[in-house]
Length: 312
Ligand code: FES
Ligand SMILES: [Fe+2]
Image (tube, rainbow, N blue to C red; front, side, top):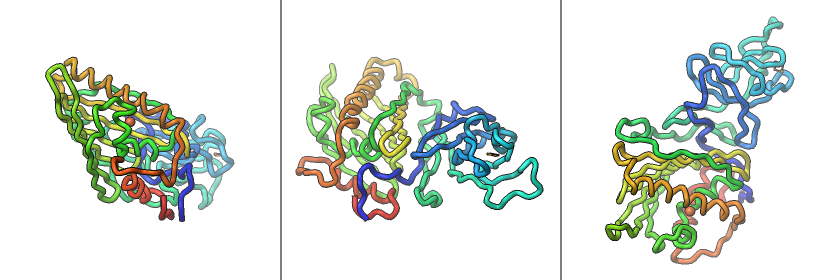
């Protein structure tokens, strides 16, 4: 079956909140995956995501729902649900109806974010989000964090990395950077070689991007100033994506002018991409040329995140 644009929400792990922004005992409404959801953290610290509408009479569990211990109590008639979505208590009934269950989304907490697993067919996770060693390490400091809400589809934004030929036109790079990419299941590793002019002459940079599904891109820049960038993408609906970018730099380098200049430059690049993403249209059969980056290869890799589809 062939996919029509806008694509459905892909399978994968997606960042639903920064871990520090969700206190134990907190519950809130979450709009993501083209659905209404409730996000909460139990008293013991486990983060959970459930479909928002209570299976009893449809109250929104994220609007007035209260965490009690390891469970969430619905604001309407007080039914209590565990983090797996199962109903634990109906305060005024002798028997809990077997169908009293809210769909739950597997979660994990890594690299400073709570990640929720979404799959259109509710299949179990088929890959992992890795722990990135620099995040939280005393040798590295966070030097930048910002979230943009962008009217674009998550796969379109990810295609930016494979699209080497846009770097001179959009970002002012001196030339189209040579690149190579390798796919290994849900993991894709792409390397680009760039050269930049600095006050001390021409410097070589290597940019290694590791993608784990469409929700996390982890970029390691080496060369004039080592920088890690986490690109965390959450599909809100089929045509809206939240992009959170975090930069890390080695402790002790972050006050150097060059380190700050790199952060400013990378932030500027996102700003340059956004108007293109928000106004372009997806072409299923683009006219590509020999100088383009591995765009077709990227699209083939993406297909695995759309169960049931065999052609992009
Ligand atoms: S609607 Fe949730 S308990 Fe009734
Ligand atoms: Fe770009």
